[in-house]
Length: 573
Image (cartoon, rainbow, N blue to C red; front, side):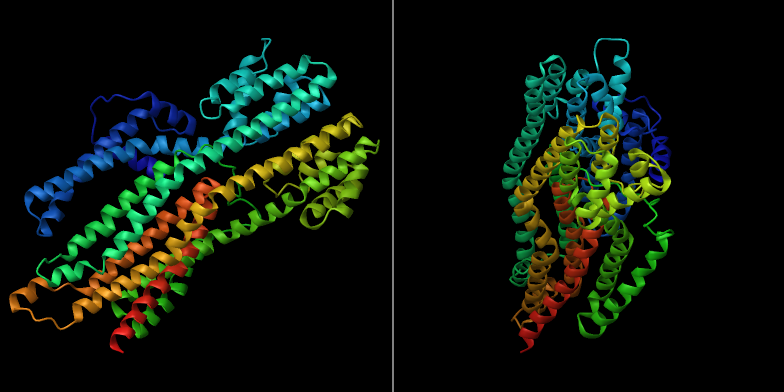
């Protein structure tokens, strides 16, 4: 809300009429925001006008007027383009995350069709048991199709086929299955599932292959080579080609971060699908209230880092170490409770396939779903079995049905935000009404969940090499190389070189300032490369992103400082 209000205020600086592109309108509509497209466009131009004031501080740094004017205009253009592009980027990220739920959505419709071969009820079940933009969009298509021979699934598929082509074929196969003979219907429904899973697998494989080259280039030319060059520039300075510290500030703290962010966004918007993680909100009972109190972790963690660096490390890096460590501690403190809840959700989902196999086989043999749930609670291990045992206990004590036992006010899944577990409970509720014919559908759902998990795992394995390199660069390799090169630069500058007084004055490079500039770049890498790694593998997962950035800061800062100290010790010895 603060950002929206600020943008509206800035937009008043540019009251003229503006043209709005169709892509911006579609993006804002998909984001379901209250911002008008005209406000975004005017806000960009207003921010560009404000940025012209940067010319004053740039002139104060000693830059000539032409250079300062050029940089000011460049900042204005960059700011205007950024504000105009943010809605499109956010919509692309949300769309990518939403498309990850397509296999589950089609899967729920297929499984409902196996119990009752009615496309309309199957599609409605898929929409009602899901969460997120796709389920809402499917519900809207269903509502628009009321009173017509259509069910809404075909129009829904046509809308999303541009980004996920396999959904079109799956939707047509699903509709065809309704009128097919029973034996043929089962094969058609199996093909429906396989087409959506194969489409997901192929799109992720193509994406992984396409980003290997650009990611390697980003790693080499955007991180490692610039860090390695730090040690060479002082040598150039000493032989008569002075490089001012302002050059380092602009290059390493402005230009390189902008280039890395632009390259990262270019990679991320090309991700076809992202399997969305469980949504854990601040309202969850296991997430502590008043998380703002955890901001006090900043001085608790940052103060010791500041003192230790001041006493035993390069004293000029004490503030940087304290700030970096404080940020890392705060991020971990803020997001760790959400990560713990999510780990519990994953533990509940871990043996869900085994539970469904057990329930499906027993129901196929004629047993009631209610009694089989108790058996699943006894036989299925760990958290999954505990959920089924809790549901069975509620059935026994409160005499409630399957749906109420899982999803009711006191249900076993009430505090477990897992779409997979909730759709499973919905299918079990239908099975409790349909009886024995639903057994095969439950077994099929187990097969589907297992195959979907295999697709997810395969996609993450394919991306592991790329994302692992990015993670390790931000947390380990980058700080080590940066610390070594800064230490070497300090050695070069401190050597006794036969220079005239004029050359000496011109070639003096403040190594303490160089260490701070490169240290800020090391911190920046944690906020760029780690989010890129997380979002390539998991999509826009804010909790995991914040937690991983915090963890990366807690390893990068000490490695950077300790490496400088060790290189300096080698010089003195």
